Image 1 (cartoon, rainbow over the protein chains, first blue to last red):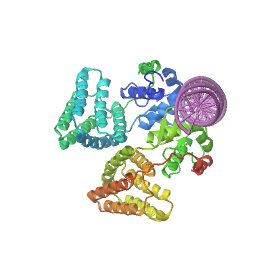
Image 2: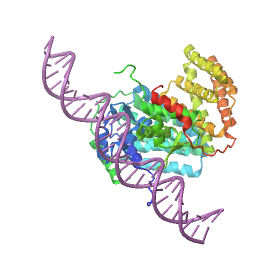
Image 3: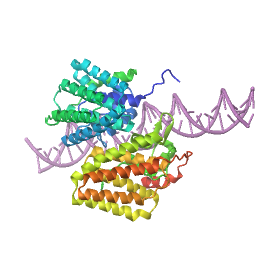
Length: 237
Length: 237
DNA sequence: GTATAAAGGATTGCATGCAATTTCGCCACA
DNA sequence: TGTGGCGAAATTGCATGCAATCCTTTATAC
């Protein structure tokens, strides 16, 4: 047994790398993802790429059309609305569970995350987007249900993808402010306030995003993937 | 382009066959699912079996331990409780969406399904279990959200699997009765009643199931799979 | 000049082969 | 009888090859 017996395997690393690349808008919706090119970049055979793509397809980040290959998913406005609506309802469940579990440690975790968000406020946009998504995922983890966590992750990722299609570059500070208010309500144990704030937060995000119809031509090349692939090739998780 | 250009492909057929076999208790929790035995039975190579198993693993019906192969998932009591609790909350969302969409056609579909359940009341147990699950899935479809539908399907299947672990042979009539009451409340447009009935229905199912600790030795053989495999080999969907 | 058709190249679908890992049976030994 | 370890068989992890499908480009007819 090797030191630290690496828990994840190559398929996981590749899926994660691709997921990050999608969420950080390096791979834009509609881009084709040919197995060969990806395999070459990641230094593995098509087999593993295929597995990864199928996994991402199951999460809704990639579309897999038969005999026609994979492409970054390009959700329609209708799908996007469905997604955001469901998101508000699901995260409503998260809030009411988290509030039942509140404890000093949990509060600490939430505040630590908020601090990271504040710190990165002026960092690059992809990073602040990622941190904003991870705030919701952290909440879901604290809700204590593995299945619920998976759903929140999936919906969160897909919403992130959607935003890269429809949203204009977003200003993060309002988001951070809203996160802070939610944490405060949770700390006070005020469930109604927390739920209302979360609903408001999410509909705000959706509204900011979903009413700009931004049509984008389908970009095509993968060179920007290089840094993500390198990490996987080198095992530098 | 062939006549009727079959919409599903072999991987889908195999996953469906395995899923049915699991839900109909032909493959019991804990049973090993070796790739080449399955491949032989279904008349395909390990590649497709692998894909199918991974898909089922993503749904939580199969556990996939590294270098150790696949087995029908065997949820712990704790996971089971989590699942059932989430189920009641998610299906609560379903009800409030369906009631907003109610129309004569929808009512018709629900009643048609109920009729099927009544008709099969004395049929074999696997069939009545399947129909009971499909009632919930039908409701989810009528809710109009593809993502929500997927989640209800997944949770429903996993609950079905759980029941085959922990529940004693169940009497179906009470379930049918409860389904009927839910439909009536929906027909009347009484959202509160419908939600309350659904919550009651689901907690009843969970309670009937989750407090008998039935330990089962891990059964091992796949011969009972034969009819499912034959359908796939023959293309008889 | 447009439209249709055919050929060639690119890409996926699936099976198979080989190496690595695990599992199981067997035997030695306490 | 029970336990530890060793080797063979079974099983998975991954790469590669071939056939089938799709896409593009070129050529030909109208």
